[in-house]
Image (tube, rainbow, N blue to C red; front, side, top):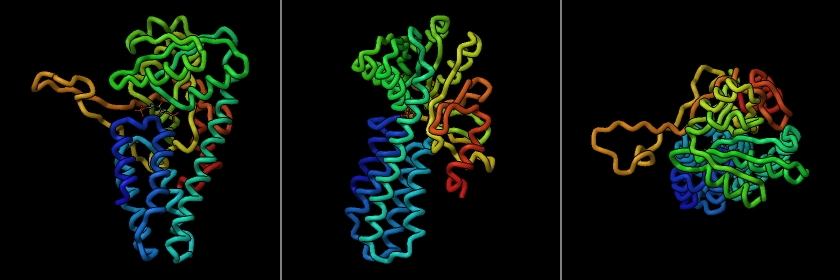
Length: 306
Ligand code: RUB
């Protein structure tokens, strides 16, 4: 296995690379590195190496359909190509990875452009965890001359809210951090909630950082719009066939390093927000109701279902 793949898996597991988009990009860059360093002499061996890398990358974080879709797309292009030369196939991995990243970048910009229009002057936005897509949307709103402020949760237990806070402060956006359990106390001051997503399911539910669904319920109770910003490529086609999105459970030591023996600690990384709490999904096809995600994905990315 290429060193870069092993190293990427470790970095993803340790959350040194976090957020669905960054995880997917790191994973396909690792495939590119594997292709550049390969010692495989035959097409069959090269495809086997890619498959082994796929298995370990998939296992690095379970709740990441964007990473799975990206890797599948690249490997399928190799499998569908008649070329026998390993170096030609390696170049195909490189060019496919680069074109996938370009598409991701383009849809992020589109999502930012569409979503930024929902931010009115003087508004207060609450966000949870760290989503690179949400940060880009907020920075676009700022570029567009909108004056607004953000409340971000610290996001227990791994404190990704600090990444969000640092980025927003660096962008010159007025930002307030609260502990996760203060979300209700501040909900009345909020005009809208915007969060990212790790997975979109066939029923229109959204999987995102643990605590997201509680915030969605609070927003619903306070009648504040709750938006999810997400690439449609975060859709998990297996949910259409009845599978539930697996929720990654992380180490108890993230919650309490020196916990008493026999204490049971649960540490799910994500939770599911039901579609009835989601005002709209801001994606590269516009702002769509969560129940139509399945249909829009079928139209835009039919290969996801193969
Ligand atoms: C990150 C998280 C983010 C989504 C979307 O969780 O829940 O909201 O991944 O991020 P973790 P992006 O820190 O456990 O990876 O918009 O960057 O894809």
